[in-house]
Amino acid sequence: MTESNICPESIRSAASAGVDTRRATLSKSERLHSKKLIDDLFGGGHSKAMSAFPIRLVFMPAPEGESSQMLISVPKRYFHRANKRNRVKRQLREAYRLNKHLLDGQNWLMAFIWLDSELHDSQDVSKCMVTLLTRLQERCLKEKKE
Image (cartoon, rainbow, N blue to C red; front, side, top):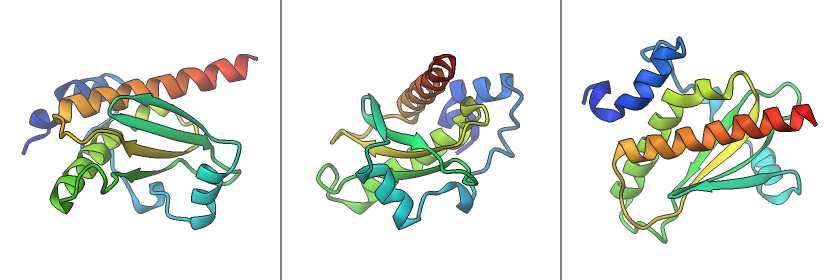
């Protein structure tokens, strides 16, 4: 599959923001895998959440010295077959990878949780991801002004 078949709006928005889409990688250091940080994200009172159906974003500011990290969860309740869960995870990772420039250097711990039992096009997933990341950035700017 070429990049243009995946989500052309995301690639155009990333290119217009000066991001080289061939170099917009998702390294291991950007994936949230620390049990302590995951417990803080889901158990602590510091996290907040927002949704853009079919994705729910749970987020909190990253601790000092930590960069932005994300995790993806697709519950077995919605897709019993692993191949469908893996497809959704690939779509979410790619949408985040192409649109992470919208965070504008802010460091967050984020969890993207799938909320639907239906598969969606990559373009729809990318639009939801753009919506969530834009709202997260706007919330950050709003909190800084206060």
